[in-house]
Amino acid sequence: MDRSAYSRGVSTIGERRRRPGPTVRDRVTEFRDGARLEREDRVITEEPLELRVGWPGRPAERVAVTMRTPGHDFELAAGWMVHEGITTPRDVRAVRYCTDETLGELEEFNVVTVDLAGPPLTLPAARLVSSACGVCGTDTVQDVLARAEATDPVTLSVATVLALPDRLREQQPGFGRTGGVHAAGLFEADGTRVVVREDVGRHNAVDKVVGSRILTAQRMPPVLVLSGRIGFELVQKAVVSGLGALVAVGAPTSLAVSLAREAGVVMVGFDRGGRFVAYAGAERLRD
Image (tube, rainbow, N blue to C red; front, side, top):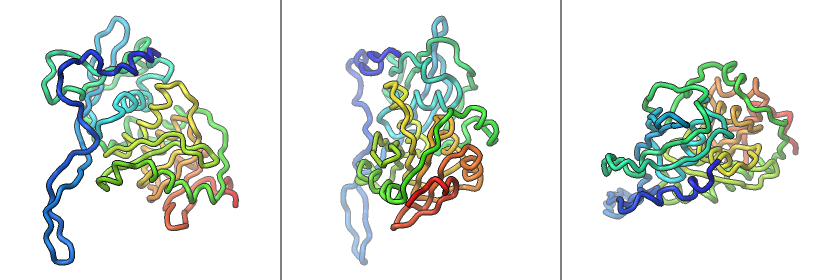
């Protein structure tokens, strides 16, 4: 992978507008105990990100537009491309912001191109993907299992599982300021925190943490921790990336449980207040 393209990012853009941040200031009215208070607040940013893909001999073309919280856009793009089955981690050569002078002001820093070493595995028709993106092109458990990365079984201690949400929360500055953003984190089996990312979209946050490992060519830690509920599509991403355990403060869906069990992934929900519920892999949780 061309690491220099990743690290340079927007060095050639020049005098363009300031890159959007993860939060914006706003004036709000707060009602409390019968009183009315006008004050400033922080609101989580949501902007569209156009994702393009290109490869030698072929100009970049749009494959999707997703609503996201600005920040770690290259990681989001890389993770999304791999999770969609468009490419593999080893074929991602560079990720960059588009510097096309025809872009309007609102498009600056909101168009990212992923350059591949060769043609993509598949090239879906361009579409809009919401920040709460759905199944992302895979509709059945068997389809996901066919794309699964091999992973070793993960064993976790009960004490580690109980501590994970707090360790995730320690790296959620956006949530601390706004209360309106999700987080995903990758952890080692002993509870060591490796990387945490925030986004207005739960699925985007997962793409970002996985993308951070893809872009730095580092091994994938085995445990994914989520700040919200567990849907099928989030387990899908975990399975495709070869993760062995998924821990969340919220509830899973029935299809999410089915996929976790079929894939041999430890799944824990409602991990808060000194308790949690194991929906899959309970035999790999030790006292």
